[in-house]
Length: 403
Ligand SMILES: *Cc1c(COP(=O)(O)O)cnc(C)c1O
Image 1 (cartoon, rainbow, N blue to C red):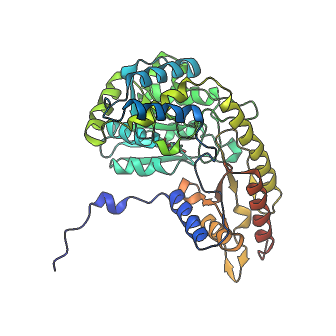
Image 2: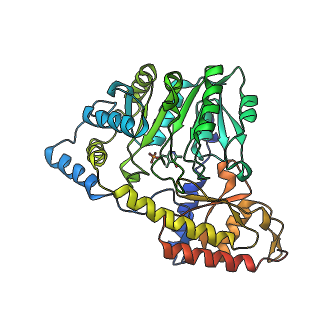
Image 3: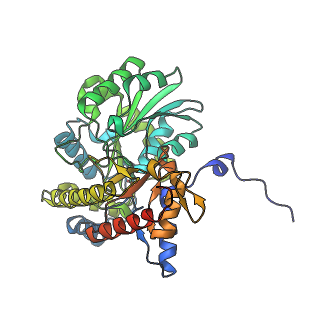
């Protein structure tokens, strides 16, 4: 029988998400009865709050279960505008908001609206796994600007400036940052804004972790720095991380009308509207004025201290104290070159593999975030699991030869 013609170059080149792959592997081990502690998940461990669920139940009973306008129901877009004004000092109108099936989908649509083949996009690293892959899916080119804990994981101004070429179209900014927990202070945002304005670029500002900052660090939206920057900024946000609503798949973009219209046209042909029921749940969530966020933030903050102090007490591991989000990005350079059962740990991927096999602890190696030499652990998990995980990692590390 003749084999059908090959799949697209695009389908063959796209990389699987290492985070999702490791989460799946840990789940598989657990299914086999192996007691694995997983620190891979990129989602809150809290339940979706009742005030959000109530909106969904009402929508189901009221029969709001049909298509909505592609950009989302008007009351939701109005509530998003109100939130963006009150919390972020960004003045958008509902026609500048497009609700999509998660912020990941919003970013995809925005990149599709902005990029032509060969365009370059500047991405500070360590970065979220999907940015480079999504840029590549547009046949565009990710250009990385690395940073490390010496500069609080903030990209250097001159390095960013040197990365700009005639083909540069946009900079992707993620603050608070997944995986590092960096929070970009106003001075750094101003530097980026000045580069964007002097080279007439776009900023795609992914602010999905905005509610989670610690130690007095606060989130600021780059689009709020001034009218000019605002006109160059596309703000991305969503319900997943701030309201523990990852499964509901609601994210949104807010940006200049021209961009919103383009995203609307693309989404018309791709998915139409995001789930109607989830939109009503999001509307209820945005209307809530309780202290839910603060209680959740405090719980993360407590876990952050446990995991950072625990990891820093282990020889060979050094962990920068994150200022936002719910991840630590721990430096494991001190473990490289050590041996386990005659096998040398040469990369952070080897370290993650060793921890999974020996400690039954799942972590994501830095390779996936374009910054090897580190491992990412999510602390969106119970205090007791964090304590147990740290103990297991410590025990496994003590068994390494040549430390
Ligand atoms: C989780 C995450 C998203 C996407 O979230 P959705 O569930 O698609 O809304 C976007 N950006 C970063 C940095 C994330 O960690």
